Image (cartoon, rainbow, N blue to C red; front, side, top):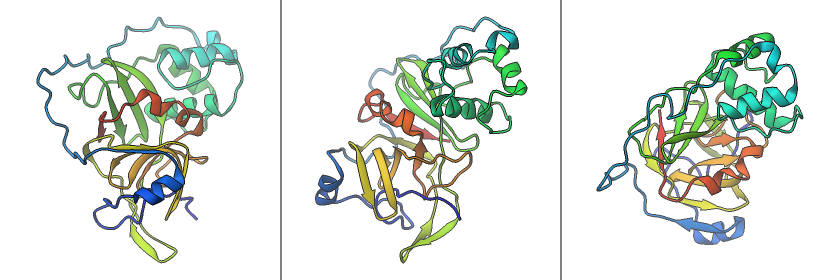
Length: 253
């Protein structure tokens, strides 16, 4: 059985149902912006970052240099994976390793296996999906199930995600297709804290298309598993909203 989380209200064909003010008030504080599915062109567009994410190349190390948990976490952090560098192989470290494995086509175990440390030793920042998308933006790669956050023209964070399964579902009499829409959007509104929707619970949801949100959830499988929302790990969901202002472009590719 797929473990599915809610994505706002019932997701019909358009996936554009909004939460009422009363429902939002019951689930947390909310800020609502007008719907904009295609970002307007700014008067003066900022220069696009280089394809490498605007980051200097890292010095190569050997796999042996990554033997300790602290060194492993530091290498992941230097590559902009969202990890706490504390020498503890906790869920933050596991999720960062999964994101790295997803990007590099490795088995998604969340463990520092030899193939992982070998790849980490020579890894470089990934190419941008939308290098002309704005200095601060979110890019979501559906194929690799990862999210990139750019701030001030540079790659800031890489997170593992779990998006819509693409399959039909029926839950408590509500049916639809679990699709994460592709395209160009903006962060329209957000709710602080937990919100319980028709289809499940969402932590710190940031809505970018109707009832579709980027949100924290206790379970972020290594493959698509949601009703259409973009799940991120709880370890990232606590601080991620503070890095993504309202109106931030969101590109789903």
